[in-house]
Length: 504
Image (cartoon, rainbow, N blue to C red; front, side, top):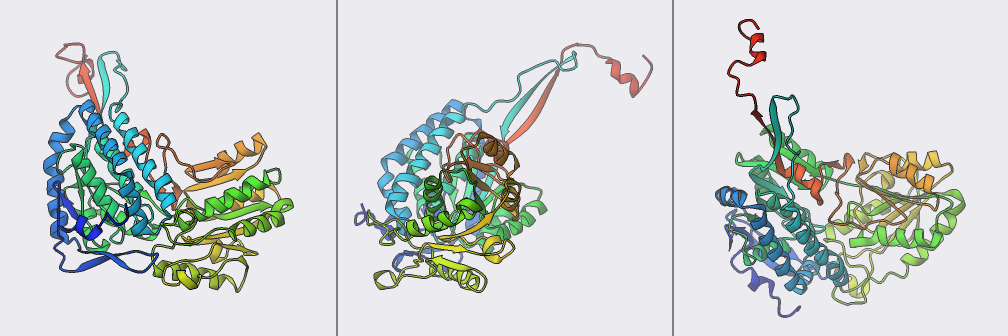
């Protein structure tokens, strides 16, 4: 798999996928894809400029009438074939994802790729269930019903932490609903997005339905969001960049879906299964090297369990194996770049002034020194209003704080600007129900943290954005609801006309 998959050869024609074909960008500047485990360049390409965005939008606009006019069954059948092609190419997708992101191959193989195949299968089925309200005579004289219609060309921007899954989350509900799309992946991780679009073409999805432009945000991204022929923008990324996307999108009266930052609380009540909570905290905080907007970042532990929880998490973190992403024994890969590693290290170094680094807090040396690695890190003793508790770190760092009463635990969980995901750990049904009601987050897990499924929506509260990825709820973002009303009376002069002219 590894040696046979030559990235530079696979994408020799360029990193833009427009109208069913690879082509080179026209921005006039090149960009590199770097393996964060080694620092080696694995692919160099010409980045997209505004002309490439225009060409991609035009290809999507031309493909829209045919694709939106296809029957739901036709779109569904094409998407089922799409899922089959993805499954056939699973090894290549996993390899490319690990190469560009530094993910352990076992994560790409067992999480990213099968999740994407499943998501594609789900939306292949969901394409046949775009339903409105059934017909009825609400006023007695007219029959009303609701149509759901595709809205047009979608312009979406995906992040670098889960390039394949985020491409799928953007593309699949859009095309299942009959739209066409131009996706801009992160310029540092374009490989699997390009492969995803190629697989769609192999499956028989028409040229122009899925287009990829790979360029920097200031040029390609902003031009895509502001393009007059793009009717809706979906963005996943930081809250700061999301605000800029919103400014551009709203200035052209576009629909907008934002999935932004997170700072997920992990609330452990004093009746929780301590072993389960310890295991869940390590897995939930270290998934994808902590580069996950739903990752557990703030553990609030009721005081009777606090010290044992800290000891258990620290001991388990110290067993996590950093190493080559392609070694099956590796648990934790590098961060996406040396710049991101240094950013994470900066948060931890500043925290030493007011908190205790229980374990980790350093980059490893030796064979891993050339990569963007950082050890799993546990911090205790920080104040609720400190930077390490309030800011999104996006790295393998967990902060633990104690609480006394249930009221305090839930209040602390809600005490950040974010509200994407959370978990609560308890054996008490009433405590669990209260946590699910009162924690302000788009997803609240009970006695687990991280699992996602295609059938359920993903999206946040507050500064974590609005709108939903995955599930049939995502169609709310990608369809236009139209009310259709028929007169049933065949009467020329309606009774209500007297309010405008004449008498009864």
